[in-house]
Length: 161
Image (cartoon, rainbow, N blue to C red):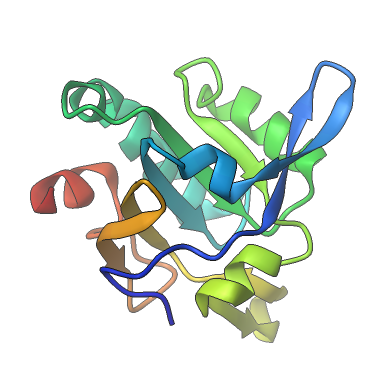
């Protein structure tokens, strides 16, 4: 599992562009930049929608003040769902980047994948937030329970950076 001090693995995530889905390299997003990456178990799921995404919308200005170039939300959902969810929550309008890890490539490379068949979540991401500088993990807040959003919330990550 990824931890503080590690370099992020490269992977291709997907975002909605003007002409439809387009690949985005994690290395391109992080090279020479300070970014926050937070991951959720699923778009449109309860805690993700009511707590996790709003926490980064509320704290975006504080991250901007700390020199963060971009706040990225990653979920193992398709890019169409991530785009619609970004619009529905106001996250896209607030300046958050919604990226799809549809194949779970990035999530598995981080060692953050989990299954919860009773609630229909298969090959999903654990809930976490990290600060990454030039591809290196500077701070990592991982929730023990995917239904909880405390240390992985925007405020929780701000507390440790």
